Image 1 (cartoon, helix red, strand yellow):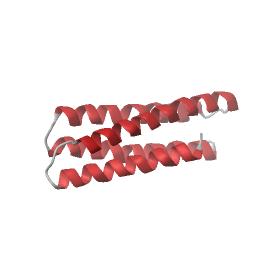
Image 2 (cartoon, rainbow, N blue to C red):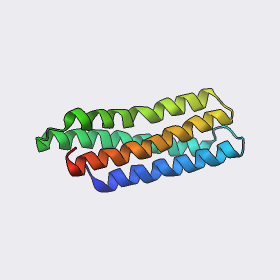
Image 3 (tube, rainbow, N blue to C red):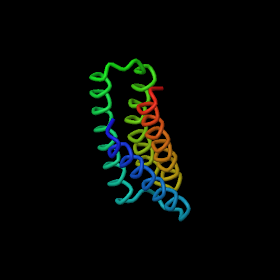
Length: 119
């Protein structure tokens, strides 16, 4: 995996998480800034997923049963949270987005840890 991409997506996920927590605390629903930030995060996660699979396949590593599911989960969590937030236009929608974003932070960090340590 590319370190800058992993840390960049992790930082962007934390930013989306902070924005969503602030919106939830203020009783607001999803706004355009959170929507655009979430879309950019998903693009980064898709790039990380593709790069991660390509590098994993080329490296001949044997930790695919652990590494690949984390990559796949990281790619799927944000669209599901965003879909829910778009459907629920109250503060609870942004709360779901916050949970999804902070879940992404954990997933990205764990994926990086698996890559660096081999499991």
